[in-house]
Image (cartoon, rainbow over all chains, first blue to last red; front, side):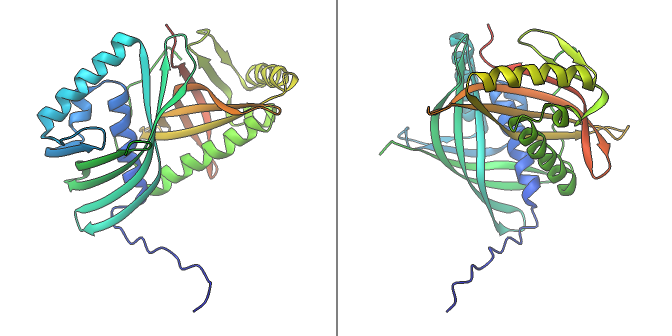
Length: 147
Length: 148
């Protein structure tokens, strides 16, 4: 036994930068309230679970419908929300599927107000390759500070 | 600069994406360490820097450097340190060799002896042009969140 740190093997053919770019597009569309662009980053059978909700939401139509309500509520209240994703850990599951775990900070700014951190979460996603792009197949969001 | 460009939605090569991330890391560290002139030198000679908070566009390295020098001196005089955090970078390539980027920037401020806090969240858009192994900013537009 030695104390030499072992390198983490990330042989994901996915490419780390590719997944980072997927998330940039996905979150930009979400935060811009662009439901059509955001929907294009989801699979038809996407599943969304959060530890602040009793039941997961299933299917693109349902998930996008809720996203539109959320975007309308933010707009109504004059709040800009930005999802910041980092500490992204990507593991290959098979040649068209990856598990992606990351931290997400939710930053909100009210009109005339100062930016603040609204939530700190850990996000466990499954992404699948569809032609030349990646799509979100499932997401489990665990909000910090919620048992 | 006349406002927001369409969001980039394509995926670029890993090396290109990494080089843009490295450029931003170096550029923000120059800014936050008070190097206004060296920071301005990461713009093209005729570079443009605009923000929606005043709607004004500063044109040319010399103007950009002078404005930033003044802002940094005011901040230093107030005993405040800023750190610019850039993330969620989307990159799109153009036929002329430039790249268009869209990203978020957070400013974390710490007053001397005080607690660190977020002071600003923004949406930024750049046009970058290749310069040797790295990039220069030809145009930057910064939109501040929370503007009525």
